[in-house]
Image (cartoon, rainbow, N blue to C red):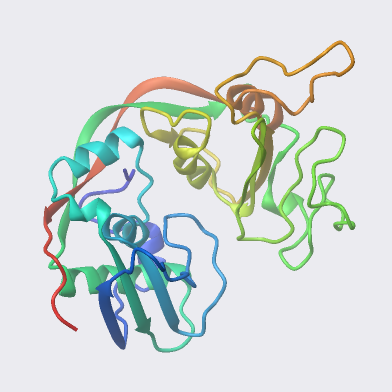
Amino acid sequence: MHAQSASRPPAWQIEAGGKASFEVASIKPSSPDAPLPSNVPIGPQVNFTPTGGLFTADATVERYIDFAYKLFLTPAQKDALRATLPKWFSKQRFVIKARAQGDPTKDQYRLMMQSLLAERFKLSVHFEPKRLPVFALGFVKEGKFGPYLRLHTAGPSCNVPAAPDGSPAHATSDKPINGTPEYPFWCGGETAIVLSPRLAEWGIRDSTMAYLAADLPGLPPTPFDRPIVDETGVKEKIDFAMVWNPSSDQAPETTPETQRDPREVSMEEALRNQLGLKLRPTEAVIDSFIIDHIELPSEN
């Protein structure tokens, strides 16, 4: 789902240049016994290390499309899309090896993938505005940030690792201390780690509220059944970090000799108490992603 105009590309696409293509690319079915490691994370998330123009990935067409169009879809949205398409769309993996000019950003690689999908898979898509049930992301108290949500300008600059109080990171700052989350070391990299069956952490520096809202539905324990739209009004870049219990079993795991880990809270509690945010059920007009046509890839 996108909260974008159906007649205008999203901002990230415009900023990345609007249109791009690989210099050369090959596509072949993946070997089920030996999947090839991808050097670019395939998905809508921001994690990325520059590759010098070399692109290698092994994924389904469904995942390549999520990557190319930066789609954050709920499970229900994925099921609805799959129901209109052949089974190979979400089952058959393809290895794509390609070369690009220069050293593209991840969003520029997305544009190249759009062009490759259109050329080789004959992919044709459009966005269709629909009024749908959503969750609106807002502040618990209007404009009041929680202790682990801040404007990016309030923390250290992007070339300085971060600790929860905004000071330079120390040797153990990649691990929660005293029951609190920690901001990620570096900007742009997304920390999304299940530390144990009952503890997960998630955070990004130099991100946006819109990205926070878009990425939330896919986090454990139970994927949200509707998209989340940002209604905080915050347009500046942000840093955030949270820890919660990703298990569907929210009962405290304690004995007379032990105490509950203070980090074992529900996602709703973490949003409220750590970030100062809440979710409100409502409806909104958002653009649904529609696939008009797709084929198995042409020969190399």
